[in-house]
Image 1 (tube, one colour):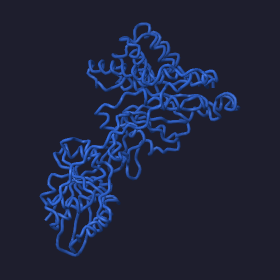
Image 2 (image 1 turned 180 degrees about the vertical axis):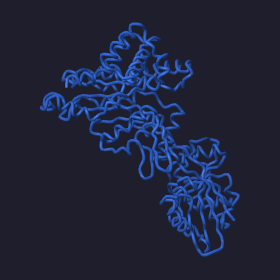
Image 3 (image 1 turned 120 degrees about the vertical axis):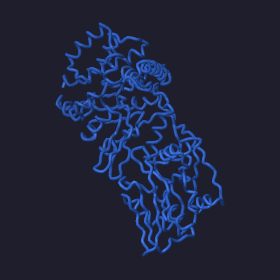
Image 4 (image 1 turned 30 degrees about the vertical axis):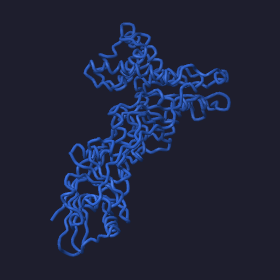
Amino acid sequence: MVVWVSTVAFEGIEARAVDVQVQVSPGLPFFAIVGLPDKAVSEARERVRSALIASGLALPPRRIIVNLAPADLPKEGSHFDLPIALGLMAAIGAVPQDALAGCTVLGELGLDGTIASVAGALPAAVAAHARGHQLICPEACGAEAAWASADLPIVAPRSLIQIANHLKGVQILARPRPGLPDAGAPLADLRDVRGQETAKRALEIAAAGGHNLLLSGPPGAGKSMLASRLPGLLPPLEPKELLEVAMIRSVAGDLAGGRLTNRRPFRSPHHSASMAALVGGGARPRPGEIALAHNGVLFLDELPEFSAQALDALRQPLESGEAVIARANHRLSYPARFQLVAAMNPCRCGGGDGGHACGRGPRCAADYQARISGPLLDRIDLRLDVPSVSAADLMAPSSSEDSATVAARALEARLRQSRRHAAFGLSPTALNAHLPVAAVEEIARPDAGGRKLLMDAADGLRLSARGYHRVLKVARTIADLDGADTVGRLHIAEALAYRAAPEARAKAA
């Protein structure tokens, strides 16, 4: 007799259905798990054996085969423990076999029979709901899984004995409640920044259109301080965006207690991060920083200090909004539509005044900036120099505009984009920075004066085709902030000013 128990295997944030087939047959005592299991799945034999003994059961001295189907799909993770254990218990008559029909099961077993939390409970719950199944998951994951749907039946036991009693009708386990929303710490306010009016304007444009931003300036100019204020200018996550972010965090094991938040992610990895840490991957592929920053901000401080390999790996996700991890036997894909904000010093010495002044001349700046490839720079819409803050700026009163005021203007610009994009048959959630080339020509078409200025500047600045379209996208966002329906000469001029900053630095070097 073969007992079937349903579970899942994760491919990116997608939970693919897997059948755990358990057969107990006469023969010499033997316990094997087949179906492309990784090391963690193969070791489930000893965890299951010990958990059953701790629960008052013993494996029969027979031949036990566990098949994970489909057999050609790699199986990774410890969440296969509980479905294997329940399949064995049903095969030996410890629980009713029909009680497992229509259930998706996942959980890791301890040697004492307790059920430990696992990553990916939310995607598994979404997949179970789509299949019309009930979900059985660890108690620690119940609050997370409950967010999938109010109509999804969920059983979240603490131990193997609890779930056995529940399946036999001896004990009834209540459905877990969704975790409380995570309020988080108060966001940093733009009012705290003294001076730097041009950089504040660039932050507002970046928040309104989802544009990538590069801040270059001497140490202590406030680059990191400015970048940390960007989350306060962004609108809350929409329900669909929130679910995508939560599913990525769930697969990464970063959703403790099921505490969801509608704040946009803000990830700030150290410059020693490897390519796998940024993009994702590893022996057991996991979401990288760019996937964890999906629908939010990825802040790279000290940009030239990152390895060239790691930085160049960002080029394709910046265009496609997707992180693809390819292996010889499988391919994973994570959503990665993030907003890149980077900060750097003009040169390794600092490039400022006084103690940070560079004594090696322009060659130092040229060598330092050359660590960032041209193709990556070409994908950054707004680039500006952040000057040192003077004592007069520090002693001046705080700015009258706080983050809430600027965020309201950015939100209004986003609403204008949403209405316009819907009228053109595009996704209403798409921002100007993500417009396809065909739509840019129609939506961001400048007037006669703006067209002439852009043609002259394209030749003078030697803009690439990508750079040309990105200037139009930035100009469209500036026009949206001004409430203008047409992109004018002033909007093109401001967009070009942000685009020309690196060229001016290169010329000076």
